[in-house]
Image (cartoon, rainbow, N blue to C red; front, top):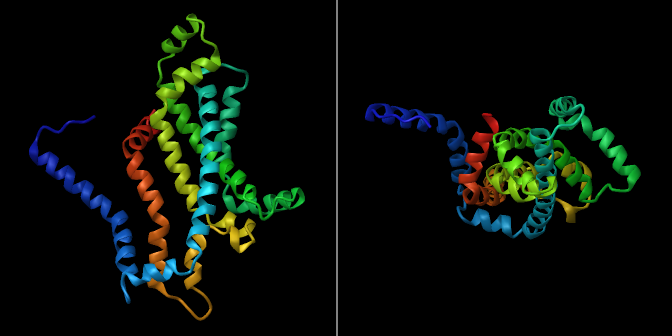
Length: 262
């Protein structure tokens, strides 16, 4: 960590960081202010009165939790394998994962729809959960690998000498030390899964299966465009992510810095 002993330098740095946050904070501020336009707090009541918020939150929560569990389990084990284990073609497999990061979501829609249609998975949550998890795995594996490479190998060797198996080393040593990066993975996955729009729009055809990202569409149509209620809906859908970030802020920042800067 860089320490600034000069008071002027600290003040300058704080002002600089404040200015850098404006482009990110201003849209959020405008969203909240805009949601209170017109009839004010009653905009939120109008959104709640649609009656779909509990259903949408339940569906998005189910998808987000499922994607988090899949991504967390796979990226932790894959990161451990790439960081600490030696096997044939390890670098080739890792570069294949890097290559997967270049695939945009939209070009996968046609093959995914065809596949799920043949398997009878269209209009099921699996048709959103599985692609969402797969799309987030490459980046989270890279973060996890970089973080776990920083864990001293001597700890693993000592555990092995004491008779621990590879699974015991992973479960009892690596996982507890990987809590910061696990928090980062959970937060990033939550944001992406909760805000998913394209996949639920294409695959979840039943109204009872729709997610929170489709909530603003209730106030936008051919003859209506109620911006205040759209913004109120956006504020409501963002609350779970804000609460989750505040709960995991410390470990999230620690994990991101360690995983990204290795």
